[in-house]
Length: 289
Length: 218
Image (cartoon, rainbow over all chains, first blue to last red; front, top):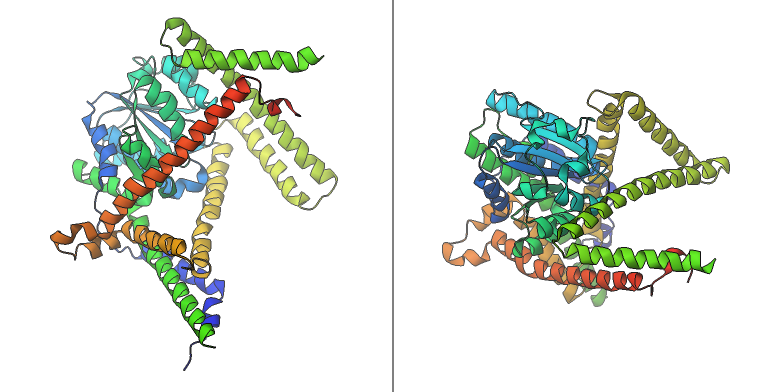
């Protein structure tokens, strides 16, 4: 029986959508628990945080939009939790207007996870703080490099930064040995140009998988310490934190998402191969005729 | 009039541009102070620009609703959403537990995430229908896409582990990492250099008054 390649190539897109929906739903409901191997890119961020002494301030910039929260949130939580478990003083800020709400949610959630995992309470203003969105694009970063508190003025809740205990030793960006940028776009370029280049602050990149490829030139040039890219990077980071700190409540959000992503990658590859097979066979058939 | 409309903006741009360049590369106290002042000015101007953007957005959509142009209902939704978010933010604040934050968490974030996640369906459909190995370049891209997609998931690593240690360099995850670190990084670096050089050229043209389109006309 001859196969109708024309029909195969013009398959109803609703069938494709249905297969994709199933490929996402099944591994999400029944996790596959696929093994996770840690790559040097992710270890670069983890190790840099580990090198810092407890009590050292660290800046976390929440530079992503609501659309990428499913991909960004798991790794962001893992990184912030890691900083807190390490005993670092975490100071959050945002380059993006959306960061105000996203960062607030993020810090609230991490506070809960920290308390569940360790049984200890965090104190806002002493252990961590969130300064929220600061307008001014790259001029804001230049400002932080010269006068941190003068540029920020208030935290996300309208409290003066001069009243926050955690910010007392902070004068400029130079007082932070490391910052982590949680980003879904090229905002990190500004942190590199006006932060790293001017003040010497080291930068770790946590970004969406799409952005990760663009980070390699910076990593190779030593301008960033490492890359945590997409759900894969997030799952690797979760593994590192889980193993190092032996948490009561283990981090697994990125890993769960990684199962669905693994299946979806395979399905898309099969689609590509099937589509090309039908295309080649149809071309051959046409030539014969 | 020519003096006020053309000459004065050109002089301001020239002086501001020159000062920014000189102060950026200087660590003298005076230079740092000037740069800090400039960054604060920029923040203030950016604040006004945001306000201008909001006014412009309102004007465009209100005009569309008044004239009942095609898609006016979307403009109405935009205006209502804008007012609801702004008013709730001004009255009750933006902290956790306020109506503003509730809308942000339960409407804005899920809606934005949903739109973004629909991409997976489109990509799958497009991969099946359009990603064809029609030429050498397209075949190369297809092969690279498959390698990266397999290499970025645990499945790729699991399959690769079946290879003996002597064939380590053939592991899919190793090839993927190499692709990212060498060809991708090189191409991206070339693009970045191109963008950088173009930005420098354009900035110089603006500072020197050769490029004047930002003033309107010409």
